[in-house]
Image (tube, rainbow, N blue to C red):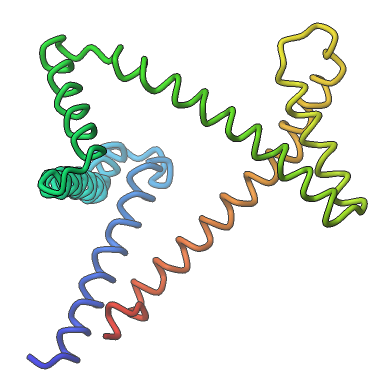
Length: 214
């Protein structure tokens, strides 16, 4: 079998599997499409089986990939111990202690929360400083209406997040900004991601992806 035949066969298999998964997910999740006929629920359940099986297979593959990635990371840092890398020793010791804690405490995740909460707080503080520095640079390099609008919005959102009764009017504006403009921007980003995923999926189904074209 030549290279062109293998590429065509791969594209054909991807097309069949993709169409089967799409039809299974669409028809299996909408038993109302079959009307009120007897056995419609059972038919929808059977049609949903291929899609569920494919989703479970994808989840298993992703989980195995994550395990392989973690193992690769650990082996890489074990190899760096010979070079006397202090950060690698700290990472390996932290990993081993976390696993030991989780196993001996029967799934207790308090250690993870005790580490995660300060890290999230530190990231929030860094985000605050980054926004303040960004606002200062915007006003220095581009002191126009849009730069002023950016600085005002950042100040309103940051001040509205403070738990002070004197800032209740500011919090009202902050909540409105989060509910309307920010929500609209987030939905626009999600729509863009969805359209990109649809285009990528269509290219894969039609065999136009680079992996199929060679």
